[in-house]
Length: 229
Length: 229
DNA sequence: GTATGCAATCATGTATACAACACCGGGACG
DNA sequence: CGTCCCGGTGTTGTATACATGATTGCATAC
Image 1 (cartoon, each protein chain N blue to C red):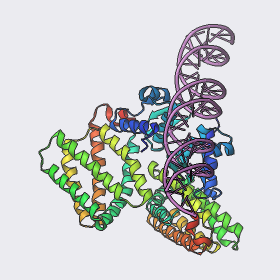
Image 2 (cartoon, rainbow over the protein chains, first blue to last red):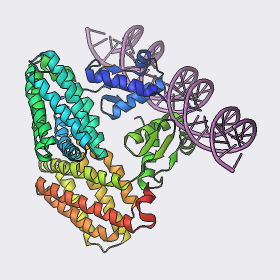
Image 3 (spheres, rainbow over the protein chains, first blue to last red):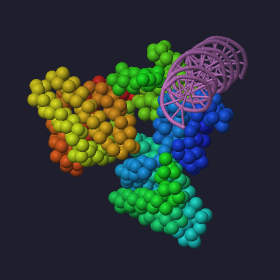
Image 4 (cartoon, rainbow over the protein chains, first blue to last red):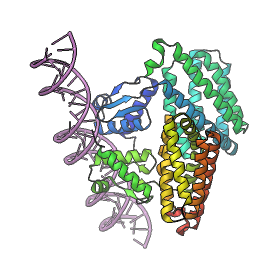
């Protein structure tokens, strides 16, 4: 079997570090510095940077080099507005798939049970971490269950941005509790085959998530978004 | 001023040829053959191919090379389903912009006049050509008037696929007449500031376009889509 | 002290050489 | 006669050398 190419490796590594916030928005990414850090040569590094630029994770100015893309209040609003458009449609598709394919349905049923277990736990950092891990799995299950190729790709491309935002704005333990409840409600609607309800609930969830992000950023030092971009 | 890079040139050239159908779906695009055809070296050719792959215009298999992406009936349905999701939202945004920005409004008013002039002409190949040109300009105006960065990019990425489809399925002179009327109606709703009506009309237009494409393909030799992919 | 111009330096854009792998023949063996 | 193995050939993946343009810092003029 043929392993992943170096370009893949560099791409994955940078993507992860950007998502985790280890590479802050605005951080310069010169090709040579990446050559030194990754051990690959300029060609795969170059390809990784171009790919990240296509995904919107780095800004690429000709002759001026690459920087980790900045995050503005407007970009956050745009991101969530776009998700409001896509994700209800995706979850409708997933609802149909779950109704038609018992294996898919079982997968979502398992995740629902997971959310219920998390809800029963007492609040803690570990509980929040477990929730976000499961929520990630849930998001990917929605993506995988989306039949439309374009829709699937568009949502998948948005995920790194969402994840980065979560990690840049420090997550709110209080919010975890509400979010778990919202996910349970979404699962219930999906398992009941009620696509409209699932869509409406995920829309509400997104609205609340956006509100929480802005509230957290407003309360964070250095005026929030200034720090991000 | 600094001109476009060779990677940009190769990318633009291939994109145009794929859109026009000069490069048929499935056509092999080896890097060396493109080096010979474009005069650029492998590095920019490579970058152009990767960019086209990210846009979905070429399929790229590791170690196996690139081919012009194939078109299946399902891919066409997916494309139009996705456009049904995005374009109504975009035209709502454009409607607001036109209401707020007189220059934008004037631009759309000019195009409305253009559609009216085309409607008045007697059917001919030249008239159809003029219509598609103006429709292209209209589509780009919608894209430019879309504020949301993600939405704008998503629609822009879809355009080459739509254009290619139009050129692969031979356009229908009868359809031109109906399509002109639909565009006039969309313009009217947009200029009236009625975003809902504009969205609904563009949705109807997309439904009709998809129907026309499948009707044309069904009547074409070699069973239509077999030829495309 | 400030502004301007120049040159050293380093970044990216490009070309090309080398390495590793996949496909396609022919030929030997069962 | 069919199958398997193996080398040839051409492809992509990677590394690196070269060309070109941008930034930076300093020296100099005002």
